[in-house]
Figure (cartoon, rainbow, N blue to C red):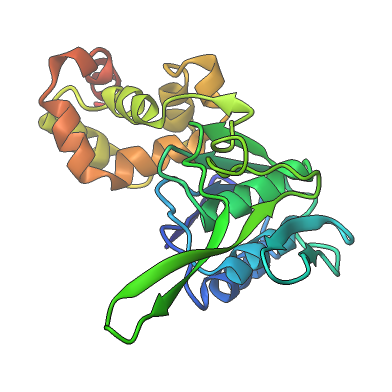
Length: 261
């Protein structure tokens, strides 16, 4: 998990959902509620899921009391309805959720629970479409068999499972995250020396630099806000090196670097 606060934006990236992920995220978000946060970005790209109940808990801080977060339709038991029983302490903050084709299972539960209650704007690609709950049985022979216990829906009975439903969650604001990565990095990755100049001049990115970098982004990408630009430029060193080797992604970074001299 990665968390970062910059320019009034709280950024949390969740790679997997384990037995304490909901508690960890809750503590982070609770701390954010005491800060001057303008909005929250929840990055679920590549999140293949995990424990269902923990996924539901991650939605609660943003939900209104009485919001139905998720419904589990069991094969051999009554349906289970997961409802927010308290007012989420971050419900008033704008929330952006990033998803991609690898977002599945618990990651989709989070995105669908937020989107179906109109608590966020979802950006990215159509998700994988694994809206089911599975368990593993161990056979006497030592073999294992995985079986489906339930399929999952939103309050409005939307199922995103590729077998039982609509084959994934379609974002409200679609774009290719890989393209966003390349286009963003291209702004500063003309060559590694230029990148070194930028980092030397701006050990911490200033608001002016961030806005200048954002000005080169397509309008629909700017909705992700400046924090994504910051994290790409100052954190993704491996991707920066890769982009620096490809001429098609090296248009304007040198100009930015020269202006900073």
